Length: 155
Image (cartoon, rainbow, N blue to C red; front, side, top):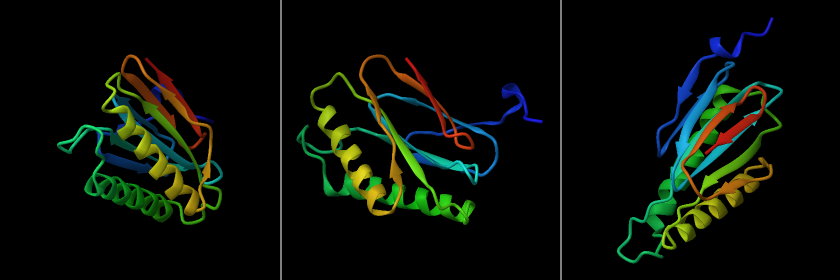
């Protein structure tokens, strides 16, 4: 018998962090000028949520530094490695990018660059990329149930 949704454990994912689960849990976060990477293997009912902020850390607004991208790549690599350790039998990893784009003209290129880096890295790692969910406007709340591959967002 499936547990009721109210009984399902919720795990909040802070910015610039990730969480991995191999149980029937819901990973949650709030996106504000940020990119979420929802990775899962439905057959193994395991998944991970990575939350990357799109912040400008350089003196020049449009400049995305190598350090910024290296940090995001390191987090992405660690997240994927942790997911593969939690579900070693996972063979059909899939990922969906969900993003909130800032209204700021300076921050948008940063988010787009981060999404491109994530897309290329995961494709090279053999992860199937699913359609993206990218929007501007109000802060977005994300709920992700990896065991089902279910992603729900609302503003």
